[in-house]
Image (cartoon, rainbow over all chains, first blue to last red):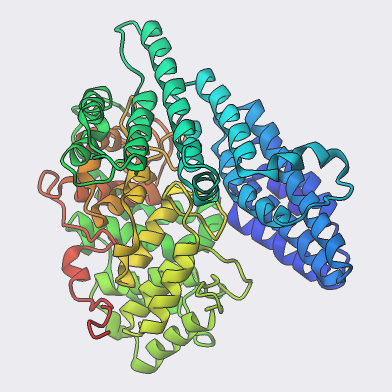
Length: 278
Length: 331
């Protein structure tokens, strides 16, 4: 009955919660069919790829499978591998959703939660054992640099596909600032982080030039200029220079004209009242 | 309905629209009974809209208060959406808000109030979160509502404030927004409840400008309305969630309020009153309440509206009577 109701009202909080309540009861007797639930939510997200109840429910099902694995109390190594497989499958799923539609921020968000989780599961493990279809994917997690480059490639494809898409820019900000990448890059060799920032700045600048050529009034692209400010500030910080240099101020002034809705924010940034990396 | 930018605010029409919601005519419709599970919430939306328009007397006060009291569930101490339904934390807040607006909180005696506080505290979990009722749904909304009810009843403690703040901060994402629970995607309405909860726990300073930046990105062209998440369509109710969060964070100047006002005015039904989620859609009391409150926040004077408190969603004259929890200055 609930399945029918979800088809009709996929955004109703209470129906999702009631299904969860039923499954909690079933799982007490270990008769909850989690694979069926995963199949069901796959369908929901096919119908509406941004339904956040669907994404929440998917995470709940994965968490429940993991909980049952833990309760089974098998061999620790085996348990870790099973969890790893579960989360790698989610990572691959998020990739497929992004490749289908780069504007699917729900999938990008999901990635930002899965990556740290998988990093923990793979850290300190040399022998990954038999991960079957995920054997190749798990290789990405061997080093933060390798993973970061893979993710930045995905971002690059996204931004060149649609520079106006805000979800790609948001995710890029995360990649360039989160400690799980930045700390490792700073540790490995002094310049790696800086090189990555310079490379990204050059990509975004190139994209902005292309967008400008395509724009009837030769306008810069708002998303690109915002990202240029963001990366320049990070570079300046890394070089221990003043964050708000001449070029950054020029870009912010440009933004007050290109994106007048948020003029107040840019003015606060120019006046040093709000950080540039927000 | 029109999306003309010069549309004026049709106050009298909206007052009539709300008065008519509970008339004999609407009571006979099937939809009215289907919405029984939201009745007390709906009444708050109507009362709050009227109070913002300085017209709370357009509803019969005694009837309103006695309906609220009939929703009080003496076994749990909470309020239900309708007499005989199960008590829920959301409707408990609605009940208390209505009583506050009519300055009738004393209609509940001290032991009833104590029981209401116990009801809310019984829904508290070890991690600082709250469930909505005995069925265990967890959501940052309920944390906000719980600390709000405890504020009204003067039962906030340092321990509750700290654990609520910790849970809320666990729900923050890399983009600066907040989700329904840890790991959930950021959503504008959820950001409001989290900003509100932090404000009531005297912890707004734990937020960086990232949150306000994410909120300001919700305003989209061409109409200047707000969406709830990146790459989604604008919806009127987010005007309220986003605007009030920005006001609470002192960053209302990060968006264009004039554009937002014309977007809100464009969602009015100029024939029957009320507001819809988008220009041309069906009106409802929920969107009506939050669009009127949104206009009041943007410019109360211009529309001859009462000033509204951005965290409590009550007229400022009512909100100012509540004593908010303050962190102790002695460390």
